[in-house]
Image 1 (cartoon, rainbow, N blue to C red):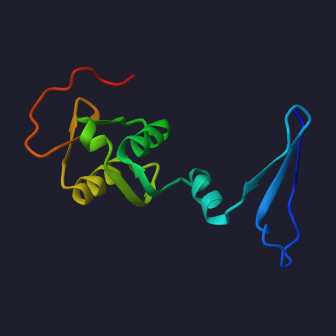
Image 2 (cartoon, rainbow, N blue to C red):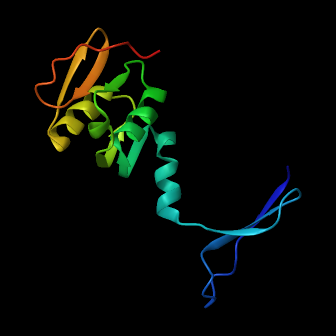
Amino acid sequence: MNQIAALPSMGPDPNAGGALIVSDTATMHREAVVAPTIERKLAWRSGRLDLEGETLAEAVTELNRYSAIPIVIRGPELAQKRLYGVFRLDDPGGFARTAAITLGVEAWMQDGIIVLAARNDDRPIAAAPH
């Protein structure tokens, strides 16, 4: 599929700051282009994970893509808590410690896996992630 992106002029146009996406197989549509959002989404290129209210589950999924040490979350309530901040992709332990302090939970290593859980959660892990 061929696409052409055309940026509007930066004049007094109230629609300025967007992009027009044209495809040879689809109808035209207009998408807003927001520089900070683009920078956040591309933070992985410089080894960073930039969170602005994503859930812990979303953050851990993204971090696990780049880390040799997986992180697991115990409990659906904890997985839905939201995080803000910039984290190094090569430091899952640092991410887990910061998340634990920020969210008031515990983080520990167990069998090569970093576990995030509510305080005093002593249940064994059902299965290690692959």
